[in-house]
Length: 259
Image (cartoon, rainbow, N blue to C red; front, side):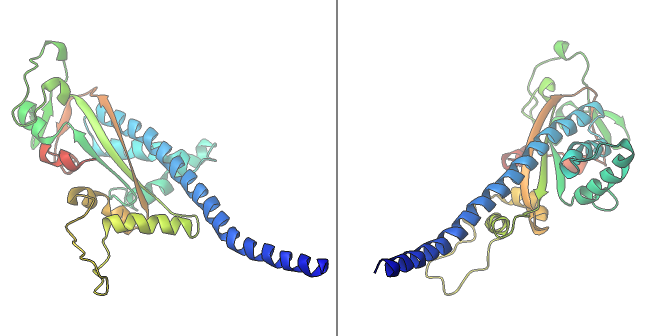
């Protein structure tokens, strides 16, 4: 009788193990994927400060901001890089993943300028050449503190550069990573209405506004999970608006959906 009882207990233990193991696997996989997300977020926070500093030092030059983005994310892509002779190849591989083969697109890395706005250039910008406008950044303590009618900021606040970055992290953990990506994807790309679903499905009841979705949608479509970071520094050179960076600068009405 005792032998039969032991065999019954062994069978129960085996059944319990079959039930518990998948749950443990999901918990471990979830913790691992979240650690990867945290690592990417930490790298992006650091990179946002580098990009903001590059913008402040180089009059909002787009190429300088792209270079700073690559340099900031390089330790995340290649944590083992130590030999300076390897930097060129490693930086190029990171640049391709972020900005494509020619380095001028927005693939898995994106950035835009939240401040100064296009309206700030309308209020405080001075001509600096053909199709160029710049906001003076000298003698700030002596300049008028009146608020601009279009930008709703004074010239001192217009000399703060704020950049917003986005990066798409690959869901590399099996099952769990795909589950997280699917949940994120549902926020950006709604599933088609199901005629068999008994409740009313209203596409207008979307948690994300259209401008936010449009900005991060390419990252989601690439199969990545988007993450964002913001950094603000004071301009160390005159902020310039030109044909090269005009598409990166937001207007005041767009600020509502910037975060």
